[in-house]
Length: 243
Image (tube, rainbow, N blue to C red):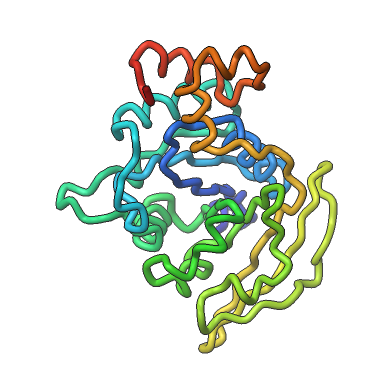
């Protein structure tokens, strides 16, 4: 893209960060901050999902509550925005990441470089996603590793038909965040980069957060570190969620 005078226009770098956010916790914020720093992102879009095809039991909290908790969690974070791109479909159909990425890229325009931010656990489950082999070519993947979930064999984690090899800038530090870069290719010659952030140390999970809420005073007495942003914890208490 170019300005009217012919000079290059800046490309906005945006990462789509979808998930249940049931509830949004400190681990989500840590992942997004690391990705923002390492990949020089202008915006991270936090997008609570309406219905995940692979989680038939559904979220514990309503979509409306998860949206509000996400809004509260990111309120004071520069470059973090709430997105309703993955809101429940009027037809009741599941939300498919590939279709969401296509819609989002169309809405953002060609002067936007769109990325998909996921956790290592999601990458290891990627084979089961709808049209999984197409997703890395709709938006390059940024994969945030968790402690104990080392991706020593990316080939085993990728959908059939994709190959992976180290990129020229395979391993580097960007503003204190380690980044490993890989090149993905499919059988028709399409190529896309995959960025791995292998040394993130916040092991907080939504399941663990819900457990702490249910345990209540017992967790506090044991000295457990708070897993939730203060505004989210207050909202959960006021609404009586996860009891």
